[in-house]
Length: 196
Image 1 (cartoon, rainbow, N blue to C red):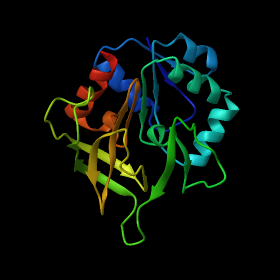
Image 2: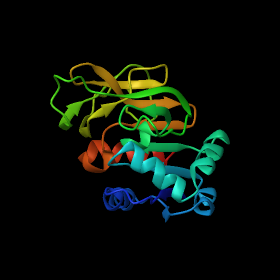
Image 3: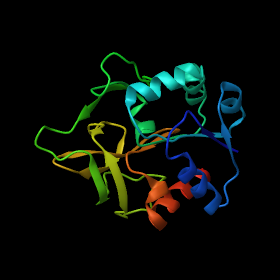
C-alpha cells in the first residue's frame, strides 16, 4: 500500500486521481501511524516551504518520515515534496526541511519570470527507475524555487539554468514537476514508482 500523506496540500485530489487511474493500492493518511502502514510513501506538495514544514510538524510526522526513509521505504516527493527533502529553502530561511539531503532550495534569478509555469522537457543525466530509458518526457511544472543539480539528480530541466527535475538516491525519489497534471507521461512515472 502507498501511504499518500494529506497535510492540506491543494493537489491531493489530483494525486488521488492518478493513483486510481493506474490501479495502485493506496491510502490517504494524516498521521505517523498511517505512514508506518505504508509499504511506500508519497508526499504531494504545493504552496510554501515554511507552511508545509509547519504542517508536517503540527501532524507530528517529521521524524516518522525521516525514520521510514532511513528504513529503506520507497519515498516519492512531488514538487514541494521534493524540496522538503533538503535542509532549508530560500523561501523560508527560518524553517528547517527534513534534511535527508544537504543543501538549500534556491529561488530562480531576479530576471526569470516566476513561477516557472507550464510544460517543459526533462533531460536524463543517468538511468532512473522513474523514467523510461532514454526518454525525455514533456511534463508540467509550477515552481518559483528549485533544487540545484546535485549528486542525487537523475534528470534536469532548464529554465534560465539547469535544475533538478528528477531526484533519485537509493529508495528516495523526487520530481519537481507535477506528474498528476502531466498526462500519460506523468501517469507512467507514478506507475513506475508504484511498481518498485
